[in-house]
Length: 154
Image 1 (cartoon, rainbow, N blue to C red):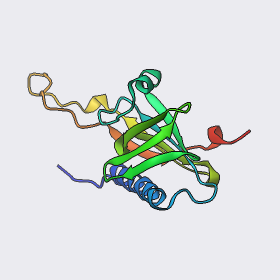
Image 2: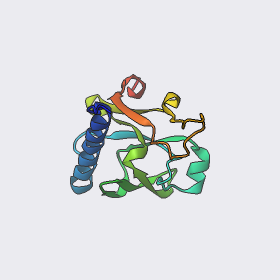
Image 3: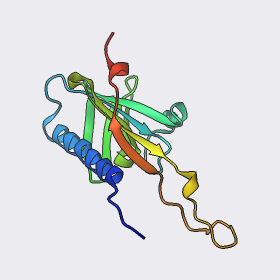
């Protein structure tokens, strides 16, 4: 079997590393100037930890804003935790980097989007045509630049 360079996964890891570095800097030094972030993440990811009422309100995806008020920002190799204010109710969140779908800093028109592609055609079958029973690999995730138009102030 020929090996190839998996540029999609390499970009994916590099872009997650960029988000990790930015959040580590913010955790240490605070948000500089007008910088602020819109972070959209998959609430169904098994390692996401949010309040039950938030999960009920956002059963698939949620966008949080890190701007004026946040506390307890802690960044690890796997993700970050933060306390944000929802209607004068502080709520802790734990968000793994693998759950992040978009990261946008509209103050400098910077954005990243991570898309998930599942390829049903790659399922392996044994000689009898049955599924081999092995766990499927996680879906391929490609990284691309996100359009900032939906985040622009009107």
